[in-house]
Image (cartoon, rainbow, N blue to C red; front, side, top):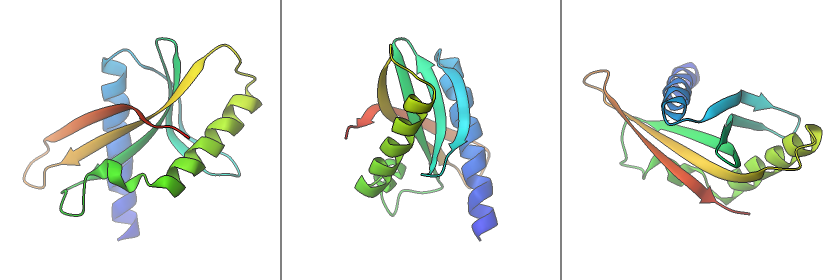
Length: 122
């Protein structure tokens, strides 16, 4: 089951990355990892450095995918972003936290994508 979930997550991240590129985001890093945790996608969009969490689901019976980005997860993403900014000496960019929801269809290969810009703040 865990492997299956990881495969779905990876597929959703691929879909999200392609979607972001199509709306003029420049992907800088995917699956950025450090000792604190991981950020799915780090991208530049206009004047912003965007730290993006991707959530992929087949259904919404347990809530929307973005609802899985709870306060604990938000704080962890913030800490990883802070580490990335300091490690790379990024001084002249605003930053924000986005969430991309990918909803898959079990019947065929169709999916829907929803970008939530500035989804949360710490």
